[in-house]
Length: 338
Image (cartoon, helix red, strand yellow):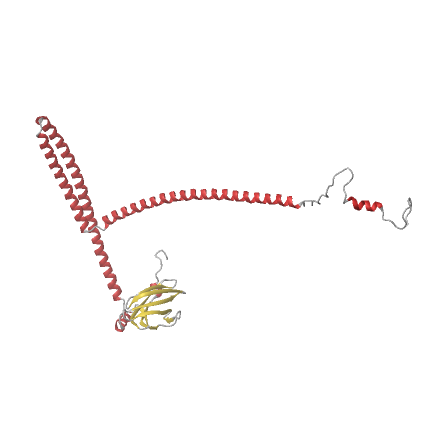
C-alpha cells in the first residue's frame, strides 16, 4: 500500500539510466530531431601514390615511343640519303665502266684489224676508197648543175663568173678532201697488207717449227717392242717396261724409281688417266692418248723422265718409262748455275 509522500518500497529503476535510453528516441527540449550521421571511411594513402606512379609511367612510355619514333624517322632519312648517294655513285661507276669497256672494245677492234686482217677487210677498204672517188665525181656533177641553173637567170654574165669561181673553190676543196681520204685509205691498206704478209710468214715458220718438233718427238718414241729395242740400241737412255692394272684408289704401283696409279681407261678411244708420284708430290694426267709422251722432272737436279703408254685396254695399260742414263749430264740446271 502506498501513501502520499512516501517513496515506494523495493528496488526502483534508475532515472538516469532511463533518461539515457529515451534520449535517442525523443527529441531534445527546445530543438528538432537529427538522425545520426553515417560513419564515412578515410581514403587510403596508397591510392593517390599509385595514380601518380601510373601517370609517370604512362608519360615515360609516351616519351619513349616519341623518342624512338623520332630516332627511327631520322635513321630512315639517313638511310634514304645514303641509298641515293650510293645509287648516284654506282651509276657514275657503271657509266665509267661502260666507257672503259667501249674504249677497250674499240682498242681491241683496232688491234684485231691491224694484226689479223683478212681479205674481206681489204676488200672493204678498197670499196671505201671507190666510194670516196664516186662522191667526189658526184660533187663535181652537182656543182656543174648549179652552174647551169645560175646561168639561166637574168644576170647571166655576173652570175656565171661568180658561179665559176665558187664552183672552182668547191671542186678544189672536194678534190683535196677526196685525195686526203684516198691517201689515208691507201696507206692503211698498204699497212694492213704488210701486216698480213708478216703474219702469214710467222704462221708458216710456226708450222715448220711444229712439224720439226713433232718429227723429233716421233723419232724418240717407241710404239712397239721393235722400236723400243731400237731405242735401247742407241744407249742414250734407260727403258723400263710396265703393265698397270686399275687398283683401289690411292694404291700406287712402283715402276723404276717412281710410283704410278691407273685411275681410268677408255679402250675404244685409247685414252687413260694416270697419277704419277714423284718427290713426295702427285701429278695427275687426264685424257692422255696412247703413244702420247708424258714428260716430267724428277729430283733436285731436274732429271727429265718420260712415260709412253702403247696400249690401252679395259682397266689396264702397258708401256715404258724412259729415264736418263747419265744423270749428271742430263740434269737440267738453271743457266746461271755453275
